[in-house]
Amino acid sequence: MVEPRQKRGEAGATQPDVVNAWDAATLFDSTSVTELTGVRIFDVGQGDCLGLLDQNGRVFCYVDYGGLQDHPDEHVPSPQQMTAARQPVRRGNGYAGIILTHWDKDHYWSANKKNPEAQKCKWLVPRQMASMTAVRFAARLLKARCWPEKLGPKTVQILVGSTYAIELRKCRGFVSGNQSEDRNLSGLAIFLLRFLNRKIEACMLLPGDCAFHAIPNRPNAPLRGLIAYHHGSHTHWGVATASAIAQRAPKYQLFYSYGTSNGYGHPDRTNYRPAWDANAKSTDSLRKTGRRYADIVW
Image 1 (cartoon, rainbow, N blue to C red):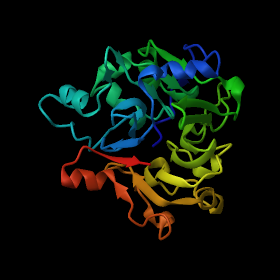
Image 2: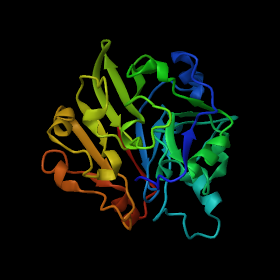
Image 3: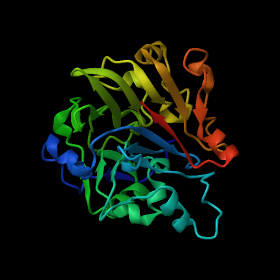
Image 4: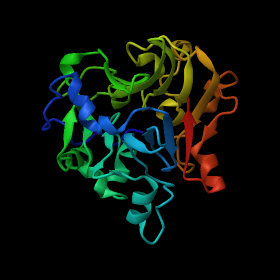
């Protein structure tokens, strides 16, 4: 999803850079997280909201906190209470962390209207040209830190216990004043890794809206879980895109996150058929059965 490009500013420009790779680990209380057991896909209508699960099946860090049209809490009497219960950010005496893949509205909007308490979380965000709506929202994130552009395409790996890791990278560098920047291709992409004998046994890919082939330094490991980029959009799909996800684990799950009334034609499932789309799940199917979320576990 791309917002109107009139009046754009630099979202995240006022937040300091992450000083070094270890700062990213302060997104969450690592002492209380010993395992990364999977990812939870929340139904937020049009948008993404993914939760990383700890050893107790609780979210300790979010990747995006979005949701626009078709959000389940859109027309309920107390939407903020419902979203706070559905997508909880409180964790013990603190808060879960939030990693923002990019500054499109449907990837952060639940933190603006549905559950403003999420603004108290520690956020890791990319520096991008964004709408003034995004810039105003960014100014309210007092605990946000920007991904350091000096890292270029390098990855940052956050170890979770001795067997798992969260691996982050920025897909494309930021150029100040570039009004034609494609936020979908210049955000953060996240891999979840599971190790066996110090080698990557399997991974899960949370790409935001970035086409798979445009993600740098992808790990060479079979995919256990995959979130369709850009809500299943056809944009930027090509031969290289399919090749980037060719290696699948025996237990493999594809998931689409989108709102049924979106005006963008999401998802276009023809690109994923037949190889990847078999047994795929979606937030639309959750909505029809009254479920709030679904998990992909190792």
